[in-house]
Length: 141
Image (cartoon, one colour):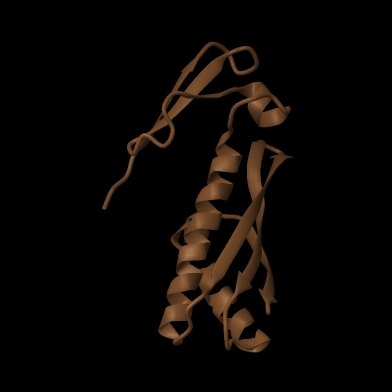
């Protein structure tokens, strides 16, 4: 299976502008630029897209681990905070923090944390990122 995303950029890094698109059409010429990445301008940026991808991937991986263990979630809500920092040779994504809140009947806290951590490590996006990935997991009753 292969999926594609594309970007078009014109101009220099500070005043230039870009547009992102995805094969599915979920993004179609979506604006991004210096102001959307390093300031709070309207549009998107690679880091928030990585965050959404990681949150989505982790949630599915966690649902898979739950299913393997015989549990069916009522809800899984994950957010991913991606940290972009200046390092000696430019910028780097140095960490991602996953914040999970889930409602899963008949699951105790210990098993919940075990399965959530297995999903964190096994998620394909986690495997891709060369960053410190942490997890806070809250089981709702």
